[in-house]
Image (cartoon, rainbow, N blue to C red; front, side):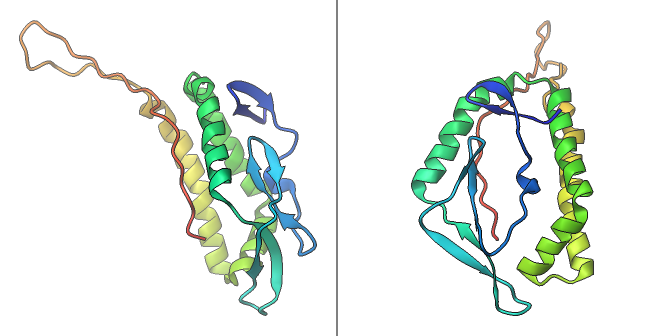
Length: 172
């Protein structure tokens, strides 16, 4: 089941962000809180293959960053209560979508980066395997433990809980 969390509620996603076909006639939107946002300020992605514009992209402002972090913070309480098996399924679903749409994604890598076939397959495989690896680690990431205490007659317990929202910005 393809679902996402927003504002503390589980919602069904109407469509996958990867389902969009990009062209130079459209501006690639930001996706914040499940909504497409096309910004006034954009930048061009130029193909190194022929120096032509591949597509236009929405530019991110500080306000967009703040909105994305705020939305993620609002969703965090519900996400932190989500069972590890459901989190795993979300990551595996993303990996499966990428595998199903492999040819399309390889095309985008070629157009945008000028990547050769070997590098295209390497970088896409790395992304897919990263999602699968994360899915496989989720249960262990939230499993606590009971280590032996250094104090006689005392017990210790380590609980692992979700910490909070992290913001990462990809270098390209």
